[in-house]
Length: 142
Length: 156
Image (cartoon, rainbow over all chains, first blue to last red; front, side):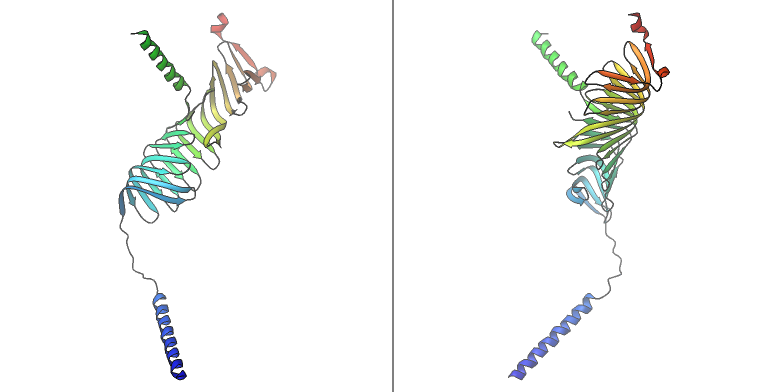
């Protein structure tokens, strides 16, 4: 009786270890070398939240184009928003890994000091700096 | 037009112009940089700055601010090159100016002049104390302090 039970236990252990070896073999295989080309993703009337150094950023656009893993392009009327500012513009490019956004189209920025109007912007989010090139008017709240 | 309408229009006119004149702004011809880490704004090219005290023009402006009750307030304004500050009926000119909000004092240095309807004074440094309506004009040496009585008012 005991002998039969021992055999059963040994068989179960053998099956278990064989299964373990098979699973190790499967998961240890080299990664696939085949190249996948991700198609450009486009979403209309998009609104989302992105995490960056400056905190939570809300972005929205008439049309969002995902160029690749790091780059998105907000086509048409778009906005970027965080706790410090709201940027309203058009055709805004965003590099998520470098935390840079920019546009050459007219832009309006609202912060706690006032409202700024510029001809374009480059936002170095990682550095806390926003550059406005060309003529700029910044009307300060009373 | 009835007198009520006239009073109403006058009232609207007063509101409109009182708001228009009290508007504060920064204008830049070339660029503006908002540095939220150092809490400053840098404006370049034909800069125009206006607050409730004065209007200033220069080639470059560096304005520092603090955050108070969820609002940003300018505490220090630095103006560089071709500085012109218009305060009531006076015009201050210099190469560099610094305004501190805490004491409401404007300090100008380098080729300084102060022009009022009646006279023109030049020197090397001007301290304009706005709250106490006091002006101190310093010169590098005794000879460089110049006072000019302007013609229009001299005749008066």
